[in-house]
Image (cartoon, rainbow, N blue to C red; front, side, top):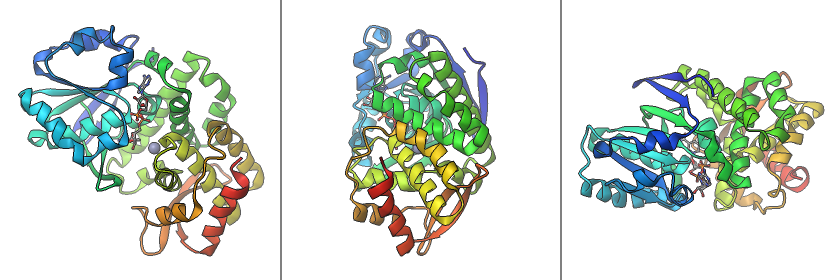
Length: 355
Ligand SMILES: NC(=O)c1ccc[n+]([C@@H]2O[C@H](COP(=O)([O-])OP(=O)(O)OC[C@H]3O[C@@H](n4cnc5c(N)ncnc54)[C@H](O)[C@@H]3O)[C@@H](O)[C@H]2O)c1
Ligand SMILES: [Zn+2]
């Protein structure tokens, strides 16, 4: 078990701790002041372990899907909390992955102008990446993550045992974010995780080591630029491409798999721009391709993809704002003209490289 650490935020600092059995902590909570918001799958899979918590007075079970993470569904959740007499000194406790996190963080910000929340992440993506960084995003008017706030939880408790029930695809989705932060950190860090890629699924200790390392790497970046005005942009490596892949496939490809493909596409563009040589491209492609296995042939309509990427919220004028990797293993914010060259690179990638 790793030492706890804290993250400095505009709201003060908040702690991240690692435990062997977080159900023990959850069941001991003073239920009078707590409102649980739990992934329905977790409540089913861990029914016995969550027995006390599930029988407490305010429990909201939500199926983790994008539809339920929308503004249109928020009134249902607010209604439940009003019926359960929510007060400003109460705490929302989220148990689930990124979807449950986004819903709870959003509600915490706007309910009664702010109530505290605690997070018990249950997916690899949430444990290794999204649990820190203060962001919440909600879908509205058929637009993904269009509404959002910044409010970190008061504390985060991680129990990696929960990951044993995760599907292979959701597991690799989380690995996608681990690969991303290690690529951002540099060649040595990526070399290390790439070398142990096959062991991540097999050896719990090795996986824990990379979850911890990923959070520590992200911590440095978000503490420097919590509100994503400058340097934090680099965390979007693979994400402009990834978000366009998600939306042009109607979210059939999970987030972390889409950004794995997105990083490969960004690197392919770097190759074509002469920023990355063939050896460096291949070195990274080998691991990314392993991680998006099963999605090599998933149809991604190029036209829909290109329309989606040109609408990316980070763009200005006709320029795309992309994060690109170079031969030294450094990622940089780059402006790219949304021109025929760019379109050809993307189409070429879908036809010849994604395999
Ligand atoms: N706020 C942020 O900083 C941030 C960052 C990245 C992603 N996100 C958002 O997070 C969402 C994706 O999150 P996610 O990948 O964690 O997925 P998720 O919350 O959608 O969960 C994925 C699937 O795993 C199931 N699940 C959860 N824990 C499980 C467990 N321990 N065992 C078995 N099944 C389990 C869920 O029921 C669901 O079917 C997206 O909506 C994305 O936009 C938010
Ligand atoms: Zn992401």
